[in-house]
Length: 429
Image (cartoon, rainbow, N blue to C red; front, side, top):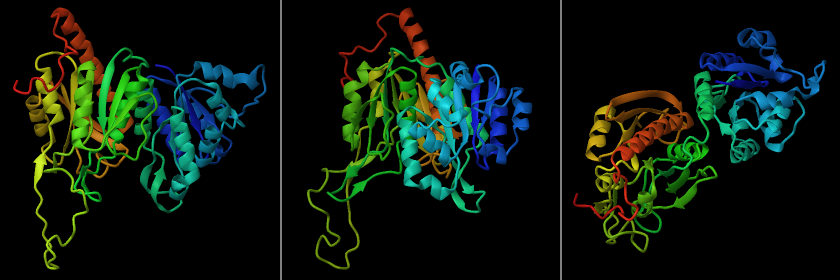
């Protein structure tokens, strides 16, 4: 447990920062609050001092010996810097390296992980300047907890309110997990959808954005793993540090995974791979609406073929060996646990991450997810949380599985996957 610096800026969400401070304390952390001048207009310093039992820092040049370099001392002591709420103003300052108060100076001075939770009017949040500043911070490794949607203090409805305190606390806990705990391990992660081309214009696809798989890859990189990311079509950019293989179709994803799987310690199949593709492949020309020239012909018959089941093929190839440790995902709309349990057995994997994609606040195209982790010991339900936090929970299981696999391998030498034994060579097993 460590000392967390909580930066509070001038937004109506500042009152939620009190709950964030309390949540961090309940997790065993000490908290020191740093308030900007504008933050005082929304919540008083006495409130934070009563909660944290520490003096609230407000002035970069407070009187007293060495007070003007207090930010340097604190920069070395903190385990993390959390800015919540983060206004458009503070986000811009952090992105541009402007250091005109204690909080912005601390950001430049510390080498502790930084988490930012934006909160502002929905038009401000979607403005190109704010989007660019957040992108700059992400590229530097700053963790972002996206805002929620709903009624805003300004009376508008949209995206911009501060994330729930529990989500900010969970995301903070995730970044505090041991950095380097996967050092020396090789992980392959798949993310995003696949597109199955019908002709030069149309394709079969799904709603996956790739956020969940990208979050897993980013967390694995942060923990020191060598990450190979097989990424389907996605508008999102992966976190720097992973070896990225971009693919479009299920067949391309299959080839990319199968050629690298034998080198891996774990494979996390988070991608939403298409189950079907057009028989015979894509048409070279656009399919006409009136294929036979009849204006009244509104039906089009198309034959589809099942794509290769990459996860099942990996399970068959690995057989009873302990590596690579295999993680599958199950996007369901009903009977989530039952279907995930059946998938665990049928595909011979170690863990299935199952979620109900019929929910509007979880699954595809949103920044939050709720899941059930199903393994041989049973099912563990995880509440709605940021996908970055869920990625941490998944990789905690992967780490435990790899530790057990190592112990098993030492007890039974020769039970590791042979790199020369490529997937696909044991399809009849």
